[in-house]
Figure (tube, rainbow, N blue to C red):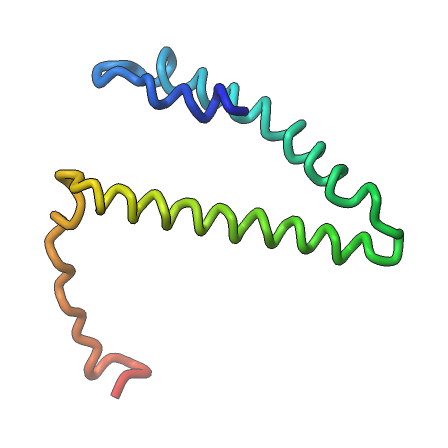
Length: 104
């Protein structure tokens, strides 16, 4: 899974999908199945049967929160590093909803 996630960092600017992107996607997918299964087993193996559902829910929630926090931190680091593309998108045009169904 690590190789599949790290491979896109080595992509050339002129590479094609089949030769540069697809190998990373295949490696990542091949590692995710066993990785998630092992993680779920490890998180719930020592839990009493009556609490297995709560342990599985806690593991799933922790995974989602960790991913969201990780992406947010990467965005902060990117903006703090002064990346040339950070903050250069033009503002969105205002949407006028007055007079549409359900809007005052």
